[in-house]
Amino acid sequence: MKERLDSMLSQYETGKITRRDLIASLALLVASSARAADSDSLYRASELNHVTIRVRDLKRSKKFYQHLLGLSVMKENAELCYLRSDKGFLCLWQTDKTTTPGFDHFCFGIPEFNRATEMAKLASREFILRHDADDPKTVYVLDPDKITVQLEPAGFAG
Image (tube, rainbow, N blue to C red):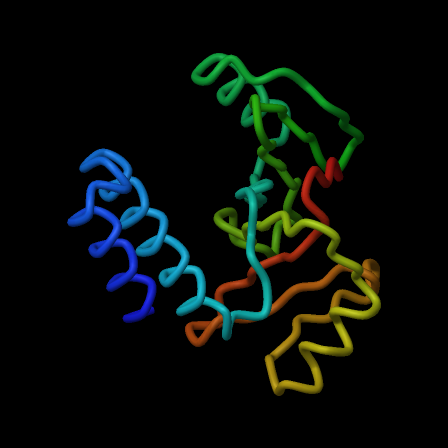
């Protein structure tokens, strides 16, 4: 990086590039070094895909979120309702009488994410995974506070 910086300054001082070009080049250099610093991350999320909440009364909650936020129905059945926003969705999930309503999980979309391959990778790196008997293919990772994070291919639509 030092060599690139020296080269850019030399080009500026000798009039080979303008001040504007120097500033643009410096911005690109800083951005690329920030990406390099993130290179130890497993994935690069491109979207907050959806949030899922447990609700006591699905019809009432659906009406509330449609009225408050203007969300349209993507799909629904007796147990859940997906409400679309421009770049994601809200999933309302009907609880039973023993489950407390509230936050269940949020999901990030990751380009070219392959569930089977990535689940094995996460397990081998000692991440704590949540396993749902009725949904064994979905990748859920628990954060240090046991908050559930779902990982899906970018553009996942439920």
